[in-house]
Image (tube, rainbow, N blue to C red):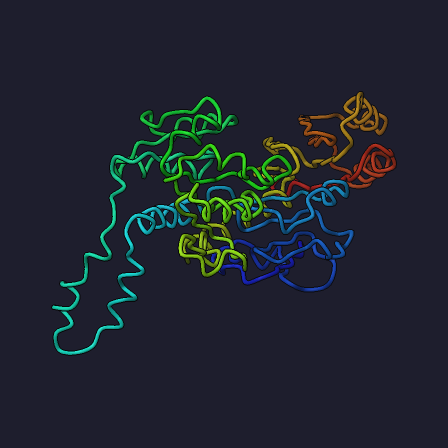
Amino acid sequence: MFHIQTFNAIAPEGMARFDKENYAINEGDAPDGIILRSQKLHDYAFPASVLAVARAGAGTNNVPVKQCTENGIVVFNTPGANANAVKELVIASLLLSVRPILQGAAWVQTLTGEDVETQAEANKAQFAGHELEGKKLGVIGLGAIGAMVANDAYRLGMEVMGFDPFVSVDTAWSISRRVQRAQDLNELLTSCDFITIHVPLSEKTQGMIGAAEIAKMKPTAKLFNFARGGIVDDAAVLAALESGDLAGYTTDFADEKLLHHEKVLVLPHLGASTDEAEINCAKMAARTLKRFLETGVIKRSVNFPTVEMAFNSPYRLTIINKNVPNMLGQISTAVAAEGINIDNMINRGRDDFAYTLVDITEDDPAKVAAVADKLAANPEIVRVRVIQNQGVC
């Protein structure tokens, strides 16, 4: 029986993946896995039982990833599950930035009298705007969201340029060949009428768009941030708006100093706030966490490498260790010392840590436990887990 703890309200469509025969939800204080949305865990005292944390969303800034890694806790996210929701909001915001739709709608509500239609027709010129067709959009970050924004903006008749030095093969296949690829960030900043950001927040992207980058943009350019607040220097944006060096800013991250500015549109973090996105994220998070707990397979982790291997043996050992030389040799020696044959084995490293799956032919649980204890005593090994294959044993 696995124990799952939830933070926030997780869509029931996702939680339904945890069958009652094998999973207990929010029972006891020793969970095997945690699933959450926006709850901050930086001050949370993780029980020693926790094996994994699944974030039903793309960002993991609310999870102490480094601490989890050091304690052998795998952190998952759900990239792409909410991409369509964010993409649609970005497209809507692009339209709002060139057509004063919100202002016009608010103004109509102030009209009175039997000739409301006449008044509206007589004064509508004050809400005339521009069209997106023929304008140039720069997309910084061509992951799941950025690629969708780029493709749909092109379909609206925009010229699109993308910049991402780390485009994956899967993403490359999904991007329209008509989307130009910038060789560097400066090329995009200096040539685009609209710039939208879709990169994760990290040490490298913190303050990625600051005064120096904004100075390279056209004074008529408009900037959009639906990624994370810390990626854009809000003070630099406000200074550029006041000096006329930037035409507008739309962000999904509320900051008091951005409020009540005529050239700024602040949204209350609506990017993934659709029923469909919440359901998709919950389903993916639950599926990923369930597969890891039952088979040890890692996919969509932000702190450990992807490690997948078919599970056909009676038992599987999962090993999280420091990424140092000769660990595979030490693991193999420890298994062999118990007279156990290795049926299959895979190892992948990521930065300072590595993850290994070892499938063994042994069906004596006492011997399997003995080798697991021996491995766990190795100071370079952070965590060892034994998984019994319910379909074999």
